[in-house]
Length: 353
Ligand SMILES: *Cc1c(COP(=O)(O)O)cnc(C)c1O
Image (cartoon, rainbow, N blue to C red; front, side, top):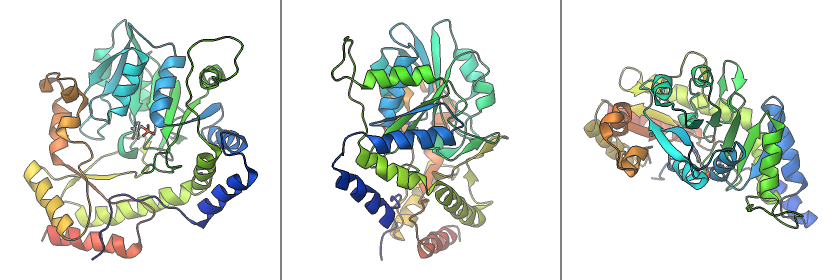
């Protein structure tokens, strides 16, 4: 029995051809392909500027840098998220302020965010976790610049507009497991061109007339060719992910709880995360599916919660503490074959008999 992996990139013949074309030009560093990709993605996000980077983490760090966030400032971020955000905030020199999430969509709780703002708060980093858009209307109305972390959410919309186009700026990732990929890679987007120009300046470290510490955060044209090819498939990818999510929902309705989108949110089904009600039932289901050759993951484990890393009192983060125990992520990606989807569905039926 072949194991169904939890994640796998979709890479077709066109991706290979796109990379081969770059190799044939002899220009494999950042170049014309990355510039074209910036234009295409900025246009998708409604105009403004985009900058291709080496990773989503680099994009987060640069977003803080060009917004002037540093030592003495505070940055709000959720505790229920990967450590890349915390790393970027520390790299900027600012102090991270962790906030709990909503039980419905696992995104930043705007009421708790408002209560955590101080005179030192310079930015709010708002991820769209598992592709589900955060409450952007509330978060962007607090008078503090919002950095949207759309690393898992390219293709999702909020009130009819793509996520990533709402905040002061936004970041994307093209890591191997993300919605579209170049192996590694990231992007910073903003409708404020001056922010993007400052970020571009920071990245162009070589042969400058005047010096300040800059850094090499470039993407290569080899990666850009891959990402551009994948970007042309975005709508197909999004449709396919939705289809798979509907198959799973049909089997699981009434048996588990789902991540619920907010009123104006139109998710990109980056992850299919269910809540089983308890750690025991979650671990039992994980074991059952594993025996059926289906790989699942616990998307965020208790010890990975950022307040646990920082040794802060768990009582301040009751929702995150609760959901880490119950959540399980099922395989959902465009490379998943029809018969594999059916195998997952049958196994889920069997698990709940
Ligand atoms: C993957 C991810 C990042 C980091 O992106 P990298 O390209 O891996 O550095 C940041 N935030 C979120 C929400 C992510 O999923």
